[in-house]
Image 1: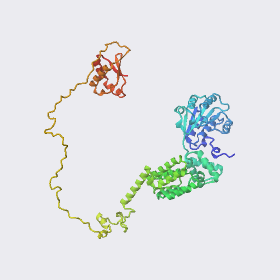
Image 2: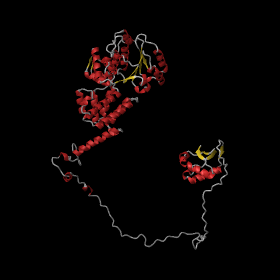
Image 3: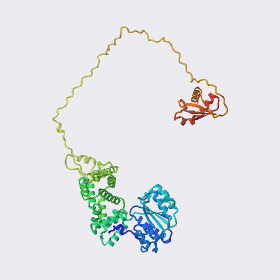
Image 4: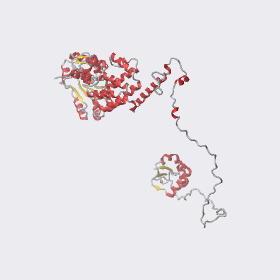
Length: 574
């Protein structure tokens, strides 16, 4: 039965692991010096070697004849672990076994000593999928496992793990595998499989894999299904991406603002089964290269491309401004995000092409910056006089000042402008009649006489102003607020727990006195009730604003109560 390449060429020793020397060297030293931790945590993106290193480590610590920290892969234990016949090495998929019952079963099994190997190893893949209850059940065993137990946890999302788990493990962070390491491994596999793989094709596969060895070998396996002579065209067909020619053609369409050409290229790629998300991603990476070329002095140290491709990119970058490149990348990034959640991906891609070719229809702020940059460029050209011509009435163009051999003054420039005299067109028009102004005449010959308003016959006639001898009323006397006579209050000096209801009249007098002593409390005690409890008065039924001002007025209220009742009573809110 055929085995796919990423399974067939899975690393069997630490030396076979690509792109992770900082991890493999440490693990080899621990195995060599027998300084093993009881729990390991392998984190990193997909396809970077976490599970492979976990299996290699499980073989290395149980190998009967280890070789410089690596397993020999020849003894019965190593072969048994590879074939799955050694039951002391258990691989658990936490995505399928994520409950507390699964972890309880693991804890019960961990109490037994290994049957064949020296250590019982539990490899828990995608450990972030465990539930909170399962993590809590694993804590004690993970912190103090038996001497014959080793836990190896692997995850792609370490941020989802509780801190209590992280603090109990020895952590190793797997990095994305570099393009050079991926290319070397692909060439090694191609040599062992006796197939042809061009350098450009290997670089393209490594770029598409995005740092994952498993993805790179899967793409290479797909390419071998098409042809055993793998080149760039074969990789493009297998991965569903467009060639560099289409990228440069789309760039030319963006420069010339040719929307029709851009949409035609998208239609051609769509009919060729090119994935629109991959199209936008490749375009984004393409303009990223242009941005790096315009921003970095030595872009070849960052970009992964051939010398011919770098030369073409440098020529193309001169035709774009940084603002235009950022605007295009923002539009493409927004299109990629929309493509992932929409059903019709082609429409989102076409909308992105239209926005790029017609910046005036885009509402993105980066598009506005790009348009401003274009205006500034044109203004600079106008100021310098380069490539600018001015025509008046379809006559011969006026040569810019900067292109003239001799300097001209402003008067000479104005005199050189010739305008057509069209005043003769209005000679036959009849003149307007302007009448002679008449002499100013007074509006009225004499003062106008207004008719009197008729009055009824029985209307009284007053010889003198009425009410001159009217009675004079005394001013209304003003007085202070009426204070009700206080009712006698029992002078009970002893403190008692019995509650005594304060009479309404007595509490009203206290409120009036308190408002005189402390004006800010005016109106806030209205509607309240008072109740004597021992040597204190409790105020109830008050509004919500009273507690905010009461601490400032409490002393004045107590003074008012003392003036009315004659007793030193403390006042508080109920």
